[in-house]
Length: 325
Image 1 (cartoon, one colour):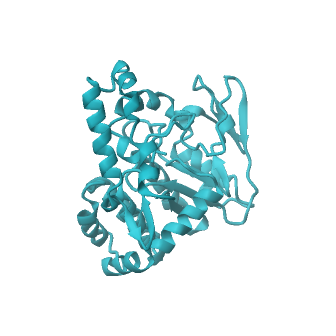
Image 2 (image 1 turned 135 degrees about the vertical axis):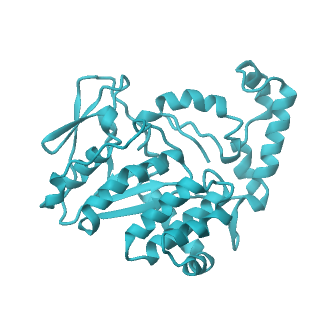
């Protein structure tokens, strides 16, 4: 499973280290790719064009955000959306969705195109991804051996599932879905996710998550029961949604079923603008609480009074416009 560029160059789950140099270049362009869909990407070259965001209005606006539990850009989106949840509460429908990968065919067929081509090692060395061809071939062989190892996946019946950053991330995706489904007080879920993002990693989450759930006053036994009984059905439901909406990148945001921001709002020079109702946002602000709040509020038949509130900008650095996908 891959990291993304504007053209969605695929970087495999076990090839992330191998392609780390490539990702340095990819990250330069990721700002125009964070809501890309598998149907293709269109980035306008015009610096003056202003796109318009207009959804079908509903009595209760819905925001879906597609993430992976340890994608740093997905975690950042959760931080961005938390103030919107705190402001609007149950007056809007904010729904997390998770991105999984399902192996079709054999693990060998799945893995070979994802771990690098040993016949291209001379090119990889020329491009300075490796020092020697021998190092290249050994790394690819190691990645392939890890990729075809069944322990790298969630195996249910004859199906193999994973997530971009590995099996532990896929496990955590499921736990977060279970927690969401089991709590009526969604603040507990947001607290749980914030705790995990701060204190756990894609390496230790299987032993770290429980303490974070308890801090958020969640029932860990029920989460575990849900995981053990419902994992496959939950994963398949998420895969159906990502397929329906052609989502491949984390984070992807949909407001009333339409991607936000629309691709037409991006320009290559970073000077795109987007009209949302009576307001206009610049490209550098698309991934901020106030701008996303405006998109949600513009999608109500009658916006709640809370929509008049101006949210504080996130402290620290400006939100990074990257994505995992």
